Length: 268
Image (cartoon, rainbow, N blue to C red):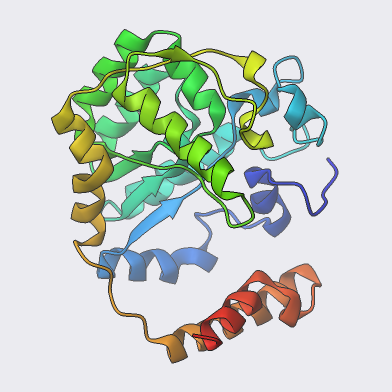
């Protein structure tokens, strides 16, 4: 599979690094995060259709975002997560994009039952909205049942326009709060695909469930107020990460994302 600057496939990063999450390389990291009780947002896997040449959406196929037999497989990634959680049951993990299990609520429920500290976020992955819209009643029942385990997400990123951000977040709000049937609007960013890709059906969730998703669950995990930032230490850490990123990627340290963050912090 081709790799370029526009490639956003998550599993590619795991493949290029070629170090499983269960490797001793990460052992100190998992131990420390668990001991500190730090909440971690962990993006594992990609939409299930990325592994199926007949189902991958056109916007992703155009960018060569599909996976083949020679790529790391999604079940391998799931197995690594299971092993990490078995060894570190106290981890506070938020798995992004509904853990890409929106097409299999029975499996999602078993996963929640097996790992009581794990949460899913609702950042789309537009396939999540389509999958959970196929049977909105069953999806609504699932979300209500596991309301303490789900947090809001929008997957906004820094180079989006304000309007694209409003559209993306608004889709999730409308899906959660209303009983509307609607499509992705044409002004949405390309990662949500064209409107004709599918129909979204709202779940009209109860107010107490919405409060948990929007506020309570995140605050329980992360705290009511942000912690103060030690800017000097943050800059130093970004510099350390920039050197690591440069060694692993061949990109100059000053051109890495970590270095750009350090520059932004230095201007505060």
